[in-house]
Image (tube, rainbow, N blue to C red):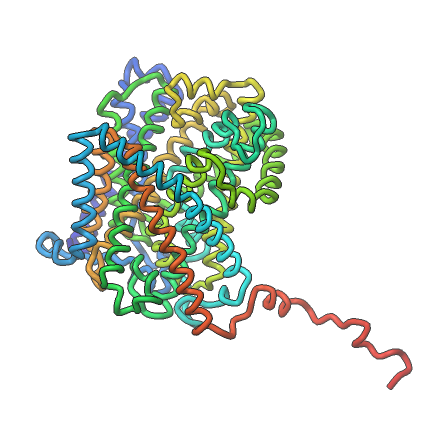
Length: 620
């Protein structure tokens, strides 16, 4: 639709969403203050619908607010060029949709997911068994590949952070960033973490406490298991994980802004194929795998968090949304993130990311205040020290099936998300030095993530070990599902209703922040080179991601799809190593004269004369 039509539609949406948000918010507040209304007056299905209306209308209103010169932060061409949305009429959208799609990057992912659901529908047990077999072989035999690739990524990021190549300004010495630093951080952080941080925050350290990692050993549910559980939670969600994104994002950003390559994941191969050779079979294969990995990963995550959201409603109010609940949740969520994606980075995506960070910080701060603060601080400090002391050992530890089930699985999952997260990081980074990109993509994001796991995971373990609440028992009572772990914890604390509301809000906002970004990234990758995606293309790919998630919910096979998505992490672990090799060669040949971080610090120090520089008294 044209710009004028879009404005008219958005103005109508603004006017409609305000009363919807107010009315649904009033009902949600009433249910929180008067829990007896749930079940007796409002059924589970209606409670879910009203909750989604409240969250969705609020986020939707943020997305469609006008983009005025006063609130727009774009100052450079990066977001406008690389992640722009091309507005065309409805007829033009329908007529030109396929013409603007890359036939390979569009056709193969659609065919692949159609084949997946066909096989799962006809032979669900056989499909799941086959995927599990391949996954076990890949994560077992290929565990050293994932461990090695992640460790190399960490070391390389450290080199970029302190070495001379970190001084390269992407886009040239006069390039200016498109967004302020807080916005830049919020966009990078929320795009790459999704709702997994909410899902696993209360659960991972608890599960390691129940079954201690063999690297540390020791009896289950002991004080040593508490330390081991928190240490490995930091390890799986800290520096190593975020480095996997950054070593994909930095090479893309460099070749896009310094060498004129297109914004494609295949740009990683530019040192070997050349910029003009990225349309080759190898380049298209990389882009197609990126689309498959992104759609599979997001769809599996949407299905996963729907389980957690519904578990929270059921736990708090004892109501069930029935079989329609997951379908309603996924469908409503899809509408929200599609609307956010079509409004672009500087509107819906940016605003929802900012809200996400605010809710994230508020929830963590409240939990620290009302939870077992002494336990959290004491064990958090010990776990941080243990993480630093054992980082290299854990990074290279390959023993046993535990590593395949946890560490290799996590690294493959992060690498499967790295194409779209790295692509987005690259698109946002024009005008910034590589050192700033690495600091933001690894250090700042890791600090935020690890603080979350120390506070949320530490609170869970504090209440479990202190006998306040049996979280493990609550998990076991619900079939061992990780989704329920956070809710008995929140119920046992002061301000439990408020914490629960914020927790449910974080589930929705976090997955929206990642899904709208992935939708835009897939639309860019699936479009022909040099053609910006239209709102129709963005809506198609967002709807397609939602359809895949709905298929998983309706037909089952969430873990199978998640395993399929994770298997794509193997190729991108290899691609990351190839990309770093090519980037290193290019840096050595093309980039000289940049100062290392130590040299810059030395330049900032005041000149200090030593006693050798001072003439003795009385001498000429």
